[in-house]
Image 1 (spheres, rainbow, N blue to C red):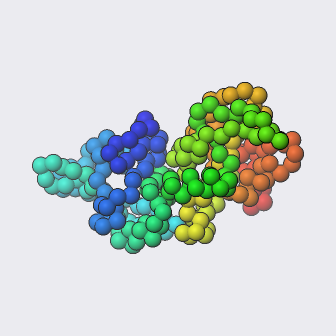
Image 2 (cartoon, rainbow, N blue to C red):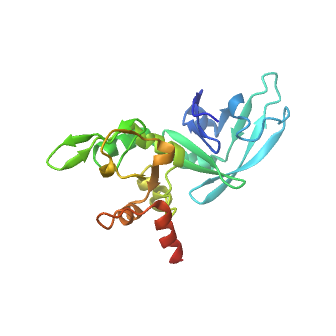
Image 3 (cartoon, rainbow, N blue to C red):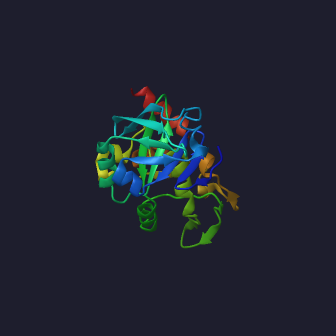
Amino acid sequence: MENNNIFSWMIIDDLTVQKEIDQSVIKYNQTGIPIQLRKYWGVEALGRGFKKEIALNFNHKEYLSYIQMENSERMRTKMYWPSELTRQIAERKFAKWINFHYDTEAWKVELINDENSEEEIKEGNFEVEIWVKEGKKIAYFTNHYERNDKLRKEAIRHHGLTCSCCKMNFGEKYGEWGEGFIEIHHVKPLSSLDKEEIVQADTDLVPVCSNCHRMIHRKKGIVLSIEDLKSIINKKK
C-alpha cells in the first residue's frame, strides 16, 4: 500500500492505517471504510448484508467489533465497535487520529494527537529527526543539530507509540496522562553527520521509551543498536 490519504483515512503501510476522529466515531460508534481500504480489512469479497467479526485491542483490552457491507444499492462498508471503546476514545480529548495496526488476527488500536506532540516538541521533550534534509551543523556554543519537526509525526505514523526495545507504551502504563508520548531515536546519531543527509522516518527513526533511550546513549562514544538493547533486555527475562 502507498502512503496516502483517502477521505478521512491515511494509509501508513501494509499493516497500518489511521482514521481521523470525526463525528461518526464519537456519536455513532462506527466509521465508513473506503473501497480502497476493503482489502486492508480483508472484506473486499464481503457480500451485501454480510459482516465480518474482528477484534480491536486497546489498552490491553479486546473489543469485539465487526465490519458490515450494507444491504443497499450503494453497498457502503462500515465498521462498528462497542460504545465502551467510543467512551475510551472520547475521554482522550486531545486525540486526533486512531491508529490501527494489524498484528496476529487482531488490530492494535492507538490514539495519536498531532497538536499535543507539536507542543511537546517545542518544549524540548523529544529528540526529533524528520524525513527531509537534516543534520546540518549550526554554530552555537556547543554543536547543535538542525532537526525537522515533521519527522516525528512520520515516524509515529509508521511505527506507533510503543517502545521498539521493551514494548512499553506510555498510554497503556499511565492512561490519559501518557497518551501520545514517546521519544524518537535516530538510528544513526546526528552528531556523526558531517553533511546533510536524507532521513527516512520508516527506516532511520524508531520510537523508544525514555529509559531505553537513555540506555542506548548511556556510555560516551557508544551508541547501542535497537537489537543490542533488546538482547540485553531479553537476557534478563
